[in-house]
Length: 425
Image 1 (cartoon, rainbow, N blue to C red):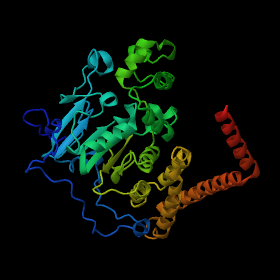
Image 2: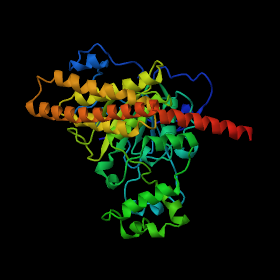
Image 3: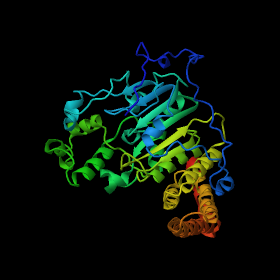
Image 4: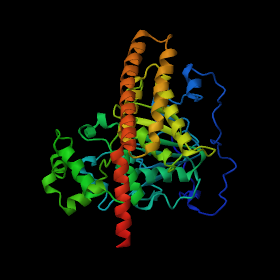
């Protein structure tokens, strides 16, 4: 059962006041302190990985377990009909986007369903971000089943970070594309979301809508007949395209590992700075929903160079997978595959591959006390990983051969000559 959130008496949060030198109320619960890192390390490889584990937030019921830790000034964006659970002393501000015609006309399949809380602020995150909210105004930001709907996920992540105080937490709940109607779609590449950020995209374009509608329409029906007809690719005129923008389609889709590489790419490019506190997957014991994964991220107290921040995030992710025997170590292999397929977008990501390889090797060394079935899964994952690492090394060698070849040098000289000729003419 969700704890009742305490609203501000005047409904409009103090975070709307953009006065410099924002002060925290004297009675506000301080959630910016770090966890006690003196706790013993649960597995030996953590020291080798350079990551000191935090006490786990997630135990038997991920949403409830995380919710009990969310206190202070909380911002939930797009709560829908079921806001995320929070602690009893949380002061929650709800942000949502109104739509022309209202909810029932836009989503007739939801007629008669609960409506959830009234929003304190009406904002379109794609168009205006969280600009009405002051910097460092909140202790927690919650975005549950939201980021996949946005035209510009990287810009949204930057906005979440901006409104968080140092040490504040971001709770991201994202559908796993393999567990939803997105299973027939290709994952959104890192290069694509970075390009959208660089171009300052503020609206979902027609190509995204057409690709999504085709995927939905060519599957067994999941909507009433009236709504299903809206997805017919042959009927997508301007009015239908605008309707789907209002309905907030799944613009993007990821697995947990693919989404982790999105964050790693943003960290490597210094577009954001997050530490990974905890996470859960759909197949974790006690997970309430079988189609989502969740991340709890923290805005760091101290700055760090982008490559170091990126490597730390990957180390933390691996530690949270391999440090818990109930989780499949093949997730690290999947992370490596996602990394290999996206290194072209951010070349600095290539340096993370040895970190993953070392993680698996260290976990194999420390696995003597684990049950036989888990050791077998780990050994299979390590074999898959060795194969992928070999492929990466072969690609690096081929690239080195090209760069040192005579034809490449001659081509560079000729192209430089042609450029000089064009400038003179």
